[in-house]
View 1 (cartoon, rainbow, N blue to C red):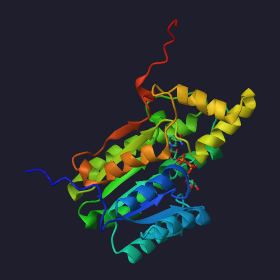
View 2: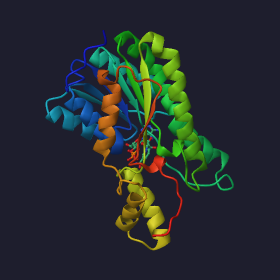
View 3: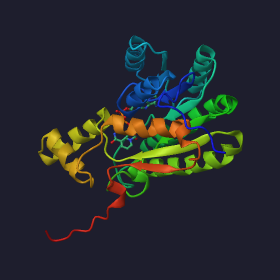
Amino acid sequence: MGPTLAAPADFTGRAAVVTGAAHGIGRAVALRLHRGGAAVACFDRDLPGAEAVAAAIAADGGRALALGCDVTQDGDVAAAMADTVSRFGRLDALHANAGIQRYGTALQVSEAQWDEVLDANVKAAFLTVRHALPHLIASGRGAICLTSSAQAFATQRGVVHYAASKTALVGLCRALAVDHAPQGVRVNCVCPGSVDTPMLRAAADRFATAAGLARDELLCRWGASHPLGRVAAVEEVAEVVAFLLSERASFITGAAVPVDGGLSAQLGVVLPE
Ligand SMILES: NC(=O)c1ccc[n+]([C@@H]2O[C@H](COP(=O)([O-])OP(=O)(O)OC[C@H]3O[C@@H](n4cnc5c(N)ncnc54)[C@H](O)[C@@H]3O)[C@@H](O)[C@H]2O)c1
């Protein structure tokens, strides 16, 4: 007989860590896990931002912690994870989501810039997972979600280090899934297309200025390049992350799930109108 499917309040009595929880996708995931009944530890290098999210959860009757943490630093991650488990007494779910976006070709990106992106997007996920795993194994129903990108399946010009980092996360996800399935830990990743967050708006500012467009006009054009015709709202990604972290996804591990409005399904073939 299969497992009993969980009710919508999937996370009652559970504790979760979300990295990059102060803004964007991580913030939406922290709020969604709280609505599902989880106690949520919000890790971010922007401590006031993380505190605002934790305060919103507390004001809604939930349990939350805000922890200032640079996830590229092993000591920071170790301390924040220890704090979380000492306050919540357990850890059941991890969304290793924090990341940065940078631009450049191999001829433009310096060694230091390469290291910055690979550290923030790949090493940080590895460190966060490494410190969470003993607690997720102890939970008996631990689950991890990483935030990769549609850039893991196909890419655009001028994102050499970002594309490499997001593709590496899919490999990391598969390796972790295979290694830790016997210990009852599931590991998946989401691969978003364009999502309306501070990161996307900063990118739009940068390219809109160069192209002489308004930011919103460029965001509309980026949205139109997705078959569904728009960029995603953060809640649309958070819903998939919450599903993958819940027992409703009890037989899914090692998966890279596109949340991209069809972007990665579409070839860029130009047809006459
Ligand atoms: N927005 C998009 O269109 C999009 C698309 C695909 C993938 N992603 C990925 O989604 C994730 C979240 O992106 P977002 O758009 O919400 O970005 P965002 O910039 O809006 O938010 C990212 C958060 O991560 C935090 N952060 C960054 N580096 C950190 C570090 N070293 N230590 C601790 N905190 C750190 C920031 O302070 C911020 O709160 C990233 O991994 C990004 O690559 C975003």
